[in-house]
Image (cartoon, rainbow, N blue to C red):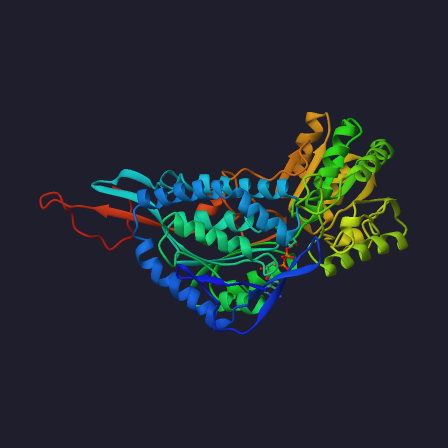
Length: 498
Ligand code: NAD
């Protein structure tokens, strides 16, 4: 059985902890590796390595840092297929989707290649006679990233390229279900010329996470995962005095207005609901059909959902792979069953999907549930599977009120032919990322990604300008170089301009 080790101080290490976790192939249900699970002393070693590396990395010139980022970008590009294969083997998503995830991660590296421009400070000449003022930003120190199973490459790459470009050193604790891609990323960073200790990987579960949250030498924590854990991470790490951004779960609504192109909307909702088996934080999991749009939308969704090709992610014909674990499969089926018993109508039922290649893996078929109401469990919880529920609203106002009453606020979209309706929607919803006739509005790397309400704890989003701010802190300098004959005496009153 293959063992997946940590990566500390520029090399693989098994660590001292005795615990390991099983890594499964979700398409076959078979264990394919075991991963070392760190304890506090393994985490401490990684933080120590990162602390030592910070001393010189934070002093490394912008041009040297940038050269390494460009080299890393080329290496990730060259290893896209290898990364995608690791993602598919451990997560289950189809290979084309996995390659797309690597591409979105690469865009953050490309953004970080512009760090000299992004870190430029401000300068004001002659703020008072003979006095100049300027600001600049400096790295925080050792920063940690704790990431979920559903994007083994993209989510870590929302964080580490920017943190490292800003002069920090990084300890990544990836999801223990999908550990391999992080180790390949560590190897690529090393090959790109990143000094040992600047990027470290510790595998593990709650034990490793808690050790990072409590460690006095970790200055900041970026977390992405479910809402209960995001809330916990935010509370515990801020109590320990750290800067924290903790992105949580989602319930993303797509509103379909009667003036929308219904077939276009259904096609995009199907892709956004069932792509990656619904295991995306930006997946559309609730469609809100307004007025006369409802019946036509249901019929179009029925056709699209039944046409989705479900199969192992490595098969080129597959459009949708398995879900991550047997427990996830059971949870998803449980929510569908509860919806049926609470009065919803099953339009497409994916609970008992059949096929030779699907017998042993954790497959759930695309599922469409109509006449769902806000009280039902399938709506009140994040299902995180290929289940699209449809709610009905009389008006756009009613649809917006529904979205705003939901505790999550990650993403949402509206399908309409009306610019006026779209504008009202974008201004009135209490959600962080909004699509207009775009079902999954994931911002480009040079914008920032993050939700509102229970989808984000902390006040800074990831990547883009907010990412640079998160991983740096500002200094403002007021400077005077007096000449002997023009210097004036000090004053005991508060300094003002003169
Ligand atoms: P998760 O919360 O179970 O795990 C996330 C990370 O936290 C993992 O590294 C895990 O090891 C760790 N963890 C798990 N339980 C813990 C505990 N009790 N104490 C401390 N650490 C713990 O999430 P997941 O199942 O891996 O990922 C799916 C979730 O992530 C979904 O809710 C999804 O919406 C969310 N997500 C959100 C975004 C976003 O940008 N908002 C992006 C991707 C995924």
